[in-house]
Image 1 (cartoon, rainbow, N blue to C red):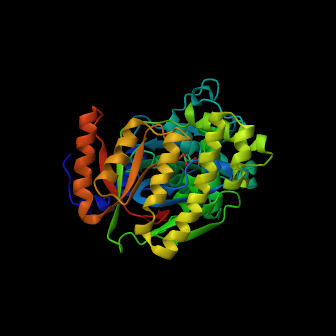
Image 2: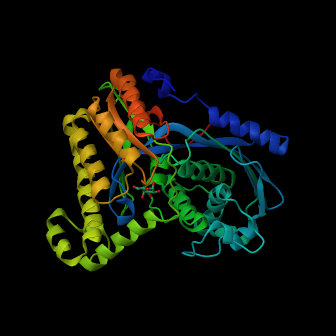
Image 3: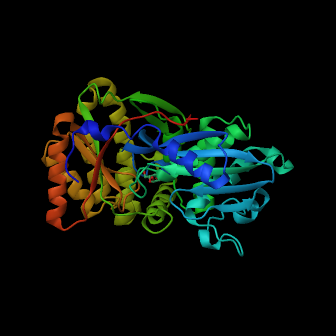
Length: 418
Ligand code: GLA
């Protein structure tokens, strides 16, 4: 891929996912959907792994969206189809209970139920349908009609841009309206997180779902993950002549396994040793005591969370006082902390960040859960082609796979497209 002017990357073709979802729905059912709903992916500006520590995050929704075309059906069954799977999956609504049995019993999808073969992608939309039950007691009385859902997405998968939260947001929005549930965006975000934690088995926090559900154009979502209070923070990137360049390494990550869970456990050990409910309650001034109580690895994990929370608060303050050109150092410090203390970066991400900075980016950091995925760089509009070229050259020189580069725009949350 050659460097193209930033504007060529800035907007995904409007309605691409919605059109694809509607086409798939027609193929699936032979009829028009009752509606098409979509929800965005997200990039995280700063605040990584702080969400499950009751801390602060500052993500923004992006222009890439996932769409769900859906209609009610009368036989009490739910059927989901997706453009990224050959076969639809169909179950009786009443069988969702068996597929996803109980609170806190997250387990691998292939173990979900005897004889059931639910591919992982289908656990997201089916899990959302199941999670809505807990919020709506009427489900137990059997008042919900069945539903057909066809899903299409232009959110890159495995890039750390929350393609999963976008599926959850689109599905939740569709079911909320078709079933007349009247749930607010926060309740739908909580249903999405529950699907992810308990139906899919990924022990993630609430950041992605809240970013998807509450995103606004030109703004980030400042979220207190303890209270779920949010504030919309104007970013002013376009006005300042800045672009957010995504450097997708192509290295896939999965948060249902391995490192993500281990980091979470380190944080829980740290909070327990310090006698607090969550690392949110630890300040920079407490770190010397933490160093005495914890082994080196757990201490560094704690130090990342504590300093990252402070960096989120600082970023919000700096944006308001000095504007987006002044946040670069905070982004760079965040990346160093993830690389050295939390140890969730990979050589590709470090190369992306270092090269972007060396070629004029104002700030850069990996975004999302880590172990793969993407970095973001805040770059002057005119420098996007040069930074992109430099990153590609650095990747080629290091023998890494070619990265995928594109710009993202802080964008609005869910909507009904059709
Ligand atoms: C993933 C999870 C989020 C959050 C980030 C790291 O995206 O889904 O809940 O923990 O990693 O900040």
